[in-house]
Image (cartoon, rainbow, N blue to C red; front, side, top):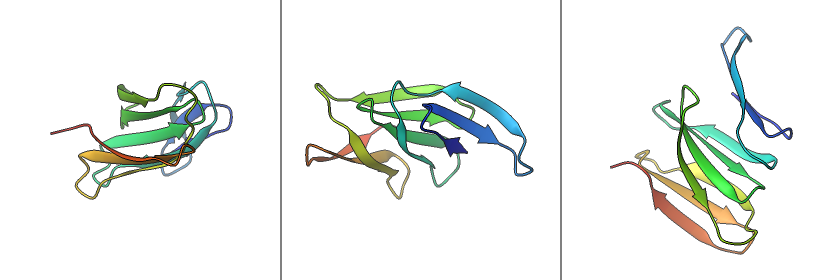
Length: 99
């Protein structure tokens, strides 16, 4: 997987062949990672959103803020059911996305 300053997310085979690429955000992507089980991807962007995707590229949740909050970091919880975010307004949030 690669995330780019051009606002796209791309999924690749281990041989380097492109599986899919799509416009993921309207701002630069600052962070992208797979969940521990490989079923989900999260992306954090300068467009003030964190998005959670199925590993096939299907968007399942957008986490956004009112105003211009830039997410500086995001990561999955150890159990993979929540996301921890930190942003430029000095807040940290834990958001549960699956039960």
